[in-house]
Length: 104
Image 1 (tube, one colour):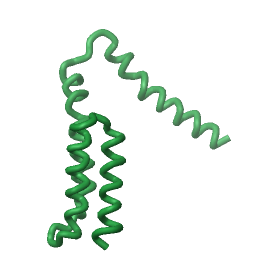
Image 2 (cartoon, one colour; image 1 turned 180 degrees about the vertical axis):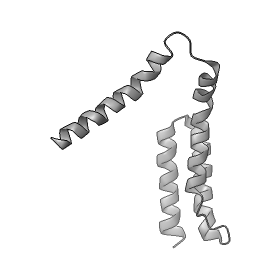
Image 3 (cartoon, helix red, strand yellow; image 1 turned 45 degrees about the vertical axis):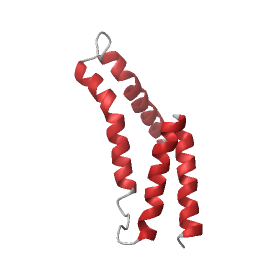
Protein backbone atom coordinates (compact mmCIF):
# COMPACT_ATOMS: atom_id res chain seq x y z
CA UNK A 1 0.00 0.00 0.00
CA UNK A 2 2.88 2.36 0.82
CA UNK A 3 4.38 1.88 -2.65
CA UNK A 4 1.09 2.70 -4.36
CA UNK A 5 0.70 5.82 -2.27
CA UNK A 6 4.25 6.87 -3.06
CA UNK A 7 3.72 6.36 -6.80
CA UNK A 8 0.44 8.31 -6.65
CA UNK A 9 2.07 11.26 -4.84
CA UNK A 10 5.00 11.33 -7.29
CA UNK A 11 2.64 11.23 -10.26
CA UNK A 12 0.45 13.98 -8.79
CA UNK A 13 3.44 16.24 -8.12
CA UNK A 14 4.80 15.62 -11.63
CA UNK A 15 1.45 16.42 -13.22
CA UNK A 16 1.08 19.53 -11.07
CA UNK A 17 4.55 20.77 -12.03
CA UNK A 18 3.80 20.22 -15.71
CA UNK A 19 0.34 21.84 -15.80
CA UNK A 20 0.60 24.58 -13.16
CA UNK A 21 2.35 27.11 -15.45
CA UNK A 22 -0.44 26.76 -18.02
CA UNK A 23 -3.03 27.45 -15.33
CA UNK A 24 -1.16 30.38 -13.76
CA UNK A 25 -0.10 32.05 -17.03
CA UNK A 26 -3.27 31.38 -18.99
CA UNK A 27 -3.61 34.88 -20.47
CA UNK A 28 -0.20 36.52 -20.79
CA UNK A 29 3.21 35.33 -19.73
CA UNK A 30 5.17 38.07 -17.91
CA UNK A 31 8.27 39.45 -19.61
CA UNK A 32 10.49 38.26 -16.75
CA UNK A 33 9.37 34.66 -17.25
CA UNK A 34 10.01 34.96 -21.00
CA UNK A 35 13.49 36.32 -20.23
CA UNK A 36 14.18 33.37 -17.92
CA UNK A 37 13.00 30.96 -20.61
CA UNK A 38 15.47 32.46 -23.08
CA UNK A 39 18.50 32.78 -20.78
CA UNK A 40 18.38 29.85 -18.34
CA UNK A 41 19.23 27.10 -20.87
CA UNK A 42 22.51 28.87 -21.68
CA UNK A 43 23.24 29.36 -17.98
CA UNK A 44 22.60 25.68 -17.31
CA UNK A 45 24.93 24.65 -20.14
CA UNK A 46 27.67 26.98 -18.86
CA UNK A 47 27.27 25.50 -15.40
CA UNK A 48 27.59 21.97 -16.81
CA UNK A 49 30.78 22.90 -18.66
CA UNK A 50 32.29 24.38 -15.50
CA UNK A 51 31.25 21.30 -13.53
CA UNK A 52 32.80 18.94 -16.08
CA UNK A 53 36.08 20.86 -16.24
CA UNK A 54 36.42 21.50 -12.49
CA UNK A 55 39.02 18.77 -11.92
CA UNK A 56 41.05 19.56 -15.00
CA UNK A 57 44.77 19.42 -14.26
CA UNK A 58 46.30 22.40 -16.06
CA UNK A 59 49.81 21.76 -14.79
CA UNK A 60 50.46 18.92 -17.25
CA UNK A 61 49.60 18.59 -20.91
CA UNK A 62 48.17 15.10 -20.48
CA UNK A 63 45.69 16.35 -17.90
CA UNK A 64 44.51 19.34 -19.90
CA UNK A 65 44.71 18.54 -23.60
CA UNK A 66 41.99 15.83 -23.82
CA UNK A 67 39.43 18.10 -22.13
CA UNK A 68 40.42 21.05 -24.28
CA UNK A 69 40.20 19.01 -27.47
CA UNK A 70 36.75 17.69 -26.43
CA UNK A 71 35.46 21.21 -25.77
CA UNK A 72 36.85 22.49 -29.08
CA UNK A 73 35.33 19.50 -30.87
CA UNK A 74 31.91 20.23 -29.36
CA UNK A 75 32.07 23.87 -30.42
CA UNK A 76 33.18 23.22 -33.99
CA UNK A 77 30.96 20.20 -34.62
CA UNK A 78 27.90 22.05 -33.34
CA UNK A 79 28.68 25.10 -35.47
CA UNK A 80 29.17 22.77 -38.45
CA UNK A 81 26.07 20.52 -38.17
CA UNK A 82 23.86 22.22 -35.52
CA UNK A 83 23.19 18.82 -33.96
CA UNK A 84 23.65 18.57 -30.21
CA UNK A 85 23.59 14.77 -30.02
CA UNK A 86 26.16 14.44 -32.80
CA UNK A 87 28.42 16.98 -31.10
CA UNK A 88 28.24 15.10 -27.80
CA UNK A 89 28.97 11.74 -29.43
CA UNK A 90 31.88 13.03 -31.51
CA UNK A 91 33.47 14.92 -28.62
CA UNK A 92 33.06 11.94 -26.28
CA UNK A 93 34.76 9.68 -28.82
CA UNK A 94 37.61 12.18 -29.27
CA UNK A 95 38.03 12.51 -25.51
CA UNK A 96 38.00 8.75 -24.89
CA UNK A 97 40.46 8.10 -27.72
CA UNK A 98 42.82 10.75 -26.39
CA UNK A 99 42.61 9.54 -22.83
CA UNK A 100 42.84 5.81 -23.60
CA UNK A 101 45.25 5.70 -26.52
CA UNK A 102 47.40 8.81 -26.55
CA UNK A 103 47.69 9.99 -22.94
CA UNK A 104 48.06 6.76 -21.01
